[in-house]
Image (cartoon, rainbow, N blue to C red; front, side, top):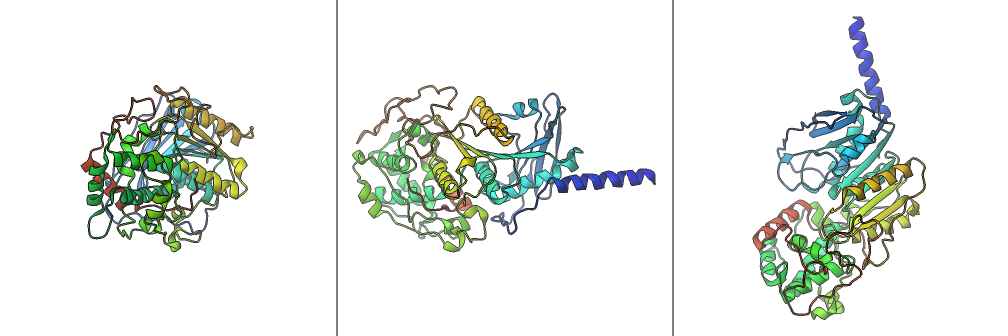
Length: 476
């Protein structure tokens, strides 16, 4: 009986520790729901690093991993992964770039698969936050004294969403190449520009992927753009932040994947209904033979459903960021990321400044052609600066997200990448399909080797998963 009583006391203590680690959650947090289908969890088992202990298993809706160093400092880092496509297999990863660094510095980390795949930042936030309560139960350790949240790509959207939904829960938030409520507006806006340039139109009478395939045939494949393809490339870059280092290199792998016709073709998914290009400001290098005024006048404009995209909408991830954060938030973004472009950082900065919280946001720019193309050194420095700031240190240095991106990123890029275009603002040739050498910022590297058929399928996948976008008014 004494043994049973002791076990009960331990269980009560662990439950109390879990409750202490979980402050009151925001009332009414409702994520966009998962698709109603069966999901197949992968085996979450993994090997711990030397000097650490691994924990893994399943929870109601997914799988998790945790790792605790022998010299645990009492703090926990939650990692939120990015978009995993539309397949039914659920997987979980360790934090990239800094896992070894976390263990060496005494931090425990935890990550989950989420209950489903697709573009589900709300579900991802719910499941990631649940790890806080799960941690003491699984590991037998006390509740963490401080919790940090780190996310990549869609996980970056999760991280920023967490800073808004649970403003007092995290000691600090690190969002790497983060998406946000305006990302899919960019995809929809590109679709409308493609209609003007090609003379084709997305409609309910033809699958959006078939229309896109016909457009891509007129654009050519990167780096062998046609004259119309160069017009489209110019619109995509100039409208998403302007000319910047590696933008044309970064565009190649994502050129076809970021032109969405879902909204324009009448898709009625939640994210498509929330999409809008009504206030999108289109820009283009007019040497391509199309004027900016003519483009803005000719594009088909579609507003978002106000019941979804407005601040009183039911789904947090569809609402514009309020900017009402309460703890340090740091972001990293690459200049050449054309899948989740850097203009999103301006949207975030604008919201945070409007809420009077600008002193809690630090943004850094990295010169790289890839989506999330960071070095270990860059991410480690950001994490260390964030944690020192959260512990009472001074606000770390950052970049001015409202300044021109033409030569941005020199301060925090370590090291400069091979072929860095320096201070040049690369012009687009007016009629020559073949771009100059890689390194000028014009030539697209091999990347995914995106074919027309594959690209069309990929966009259909994104359209089905994410509609055409959400967000608030964007001004370049």
